Amino acid sequence: MNDKQPTYRKFSFSRREIIWALRNLDLLKSGYWPIDSETTGYIDMAIGTKTVRREPGSVKPVLIAGEIEARLERCGVDGYMVKGMYCLNDTPETIGRHFGLSGTAVTFRVQAVLRFVSGWRRKLSRYDRHSRAYYGIKKGD
Image (tube, rainbow, N blue to C red; front, side, top):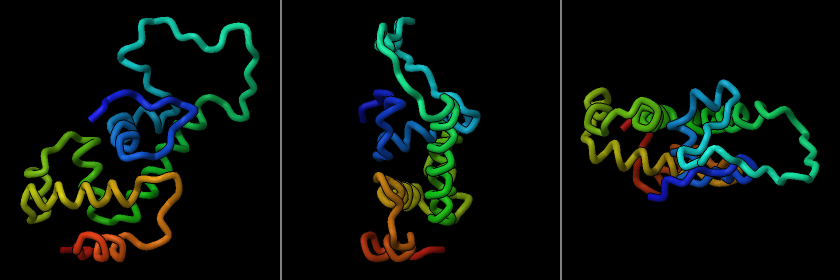
């Protein structure tokens, strides 16, 4: 997986970007955009040109964090598995012990949730219908 940091202006809710945001969720919720680890210390922000901001700099990180949390909340228990895996760095086996599932089942459910919550817009269908139709997962199984 490419671990390149998503840009502030072009966050599109792809699976890769959602995983990155989950790993930085606390920082985003506090209104800060994480600094790229590969940054050399010099950021060229279009020197000599004027930019117009429509909102304060802290708004977009908070909105992104809130949107991801709202999407995960629609997934019920499986959404908590995703947060455990990416926010708390738990292994699938550890999460599975809490829910009476194998590590493989947890990984499968986490991937199903990431497919459901990714994309520019929220899915219109409910997660249980989406997961049942595409993956054979029943909510609460």
